[in-house]
Image 1: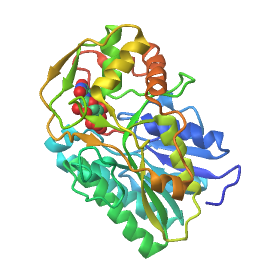
Image 2 (image 1 turned 45 degrees about the vertical axis):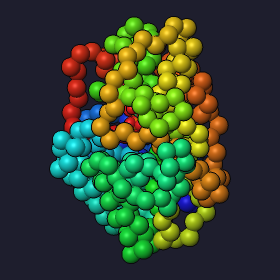
Image 3 (image 1 turned 45 degrees about the horizontal axis):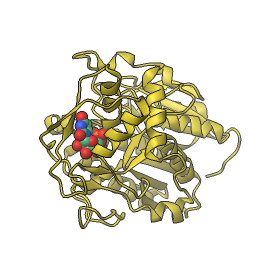
Image 4 (image 1 turned 90 degrees about the horizontal axis):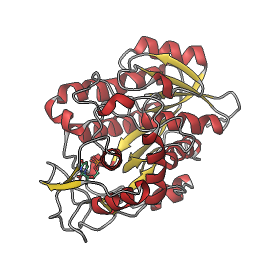
Length: 350
Ligand code: UDP
């Protein structure tokens, strides 16, 4: 993209977890994030860099006004619903927010000549994963989403690819593996409501601020029987978005790129790392498998290196857990999220 000190980048869902860290990375790169978020699950306190506009991803008029008012030249699209379990119960909502919302955004971008897009996709497009339980997953692996959430991410990728061919948009879809950790500043971090992710739940259990962790199955075909996942520090993920925005791609190109480390950590290894960091073991019980959980999801990251010139720098498990723990001990927002029954509205911003 044409990068000048004033270049304005629309960040839909920029008040959410990955969006806020990406806004900080854009700012540090000399770009101006224009954060567009409904705040139905994002946090106003997470918006510390650039401009803020409160709006819904399905509101084409408000998107167009924002693009025009701020002279937006590129976009990063995070806004959407993210809870896999909820997508099974309410697929209609997920197609409306994630797919129809992306249609609305794409129309606004083409209408106003915004030629560059980075899309927040997911390893969920692969469904049960790679060719074998311990193999890394390349981008050309079979796409067989195991949930309506994954279906919507794949549908968006295909729509964006077609839009690139038809209108000359240049786009990169980043397929995230397991985003984790927090910015070391302590200013922004993970605050999902309800929280379902392993690392914050394990930390809460170890700190005595949440119930004992349930490990979802130790009978998988993995070295210690628990699931393997590829945990990527949220700041490395944020850096991948900046790299994707600036990648030297021909006009009209569409690329899908995995973002992970290439290494898997098991649930029990995470439990051990959290116990070491807190200085107290994580209390846990072993429960049944969670429906739809593949044994192993680990990225093949060769393409991220060659296409984006990007490699993770902060994603050792100990570093991720240390940064997550700093945040969980003193979150700037969302601290009520572990209180019983507290739930927020429908729209999430990743
Ligand atoms: N997990 C677990 N207990 C929990 C939450 C998660 O054992 O309370 C496991 C889950 O089965 C998966 C891994 O931790 O193998 C990461 O799950 P998370 O929900 O954080 O991310 P996902 O892989 O589902 O995107």
